Image (cartoon, rainbow, N blue to C red; front, top):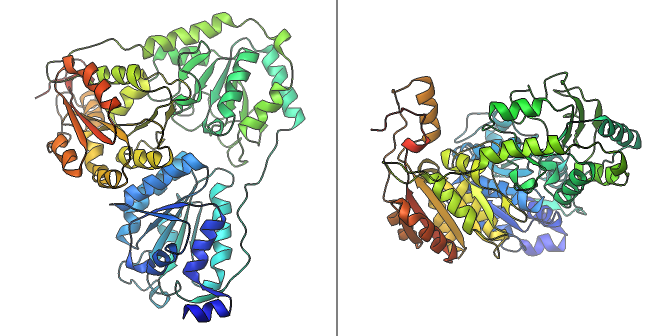
Length: 555
């Protein structure tokens, strides 16, 4: 069969799919194999692409999302139809919320059974139509290359996001004429001179400007240009939701993050700004405090909004200057202009914002009767991690403490999800460790999040990766419990957790383990765990009372 295909310069549709991945620079895919795409799995054997077998489709999707953030290319995930697709949905939503390119291939029933309520059949256009940028079902194998070319362009174009490709199982082994394949390319945008001049005028007239820095500055020279512009034009920088690593957190020009932990004093100070430069951010609801800072649709401040998607700029806020271009290019052009001699003295404004944030982020050691205060562990991490460490948090209280009290300094990196979904931590850290084997990878996760995807430790050990996992075991779904105590004091419901001996579970996978049961062991154990190699899990017997509102009773 293969000899005949070679003679006629034919390939199977599955081989075309794999060749399209190769030509677009994909070298790794994440999957949980399914019988509905066996020809694709077979085609990978003759390719340069590494296939990573995960233990759950949600984990495979999370790893693909993390890989996309690292490489800038679409993360690739393959899952089986029906149950496999529903399990992967959490990662598809994450890619949409985090503006990361993701292509998910889903096996599908044979074409003759489509829309006939077949075994494990789902109409993926209906299922994912609201969160995916594109959903396609390839029923003609001759169109495989065409559809995948469009899929790559859609995934990386404008605001990057997820694309779903449904693969009826009976098309994958069919012969297809081998086309000439070319990689996708992102359409380029550029700042215009008029917008640059208007921005310079606004900067010159502003007494209290503020930069809101978003994910569009995370790649290439984005961070370097942000720092140079903040210094040159004397503008303090606030980072958008969960983008703490865009700017040194201990720098005088750092004003803090816009997220869920801002104080009234900080928000009031931000609101006194007279000019906002929103650079590389979509200005979503959490960054803008429910579209109130800046206020939608007409901000109280003058607004310059720079983002490389025309569907975003002007959608919720009317900017005084709207620029459809990538933020680094905008800053490059802005920095070509010399405004230093005309820049007003903004020292009082800069120092005020930095002082407020420094007060919020200063950790003061605490003790609790019911366990280790996890904030003390975060403080020990901050003091002991390497200068180029990559921190991968899961969700919940453990992550919230990290965002508040861990001061990121370049080249340290934060790999957090905007969605705040539980279960990302362990698989996300694995994907990062596979790309960055020479860097220290630290995962911070709660007992709830670990119980969702902690089984992926098997893959981490199998791949001989090096990751330090710090697990906060407070026997509770902490974030929900905190909100319960605020809304319904003294009436906890459905938030208590019982769990296994996490250290024993980790050892069964082949991990090195430590347990922190009291405050005296925090500094020494954290330091020892970070020096160890391989997969290390540190279970912290954490206090629940320490994170609950004052007066809450812990049984």
